[in-house]
Image: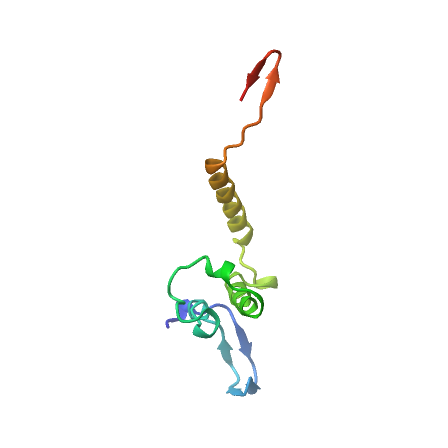
Length: 117
């Protein structure tokens, strides 16, 4: 993977041992979001197929790692993606438009003897 796939990580200023792996000082450690979202351990064998319903099918212990790996894409705390709120607004608008398309909202308004929709 190229450097463009690596997100902001942590710089180690001294030699360290993390998760049983030696990390020399002066090195940056980041994550590859593409690789994290295609983990066979988390998403199973069909990880490269776009299946939104997989989030509805899993429950309990299998759902937690999926949610944690998705959280890595948006970030957390001071590293939170600035577009997160905009994305949620757009998703909510799309949801409303789809629902309104299939189930039109009709509120009768009464003006005198006429009924207007």
